[in-house]
Length: 113
Figure 1 (cartoon, rainbow, N blue to C red):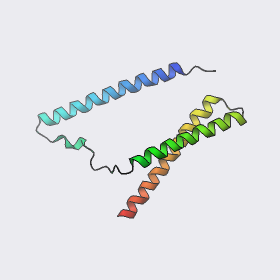
Figure 2 (cartoon, rainbow, N blue to C red):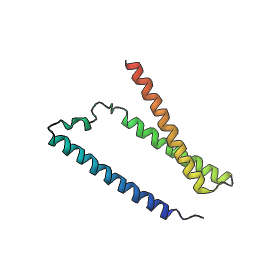
Figure 3 (cartoon, one colour):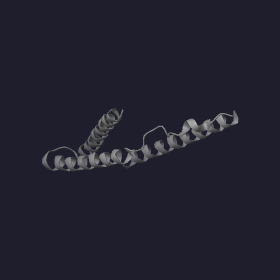
Figure 4 (spheres, rainbow, N blue to C red):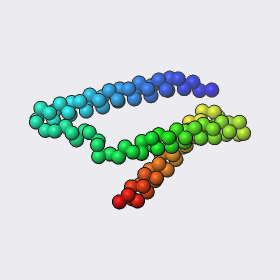
């Protein structure tokens, strides 16, 4: 078995560094805009439709749950390694759910117009 703990810790550390760097740059951009007398409202995403947020997360969690279930079935019935089955099925299920959510949102927005 492969110990995935160091890989996960490394990923979390890099994600944290990236997040902090992103927040620092964003704050810096806002301060620069304010100093120049410009409006920093471009950072507010009120244009974005937030009515589909619960649908998006619901579908994502259903996809991840289905991926875990399918991965469990694969590990019991085949000789597939657990790590491969779980990671691939979780990402595959979540990805399919997000693509389906995109198609649903696109269809609803086209029907509204």
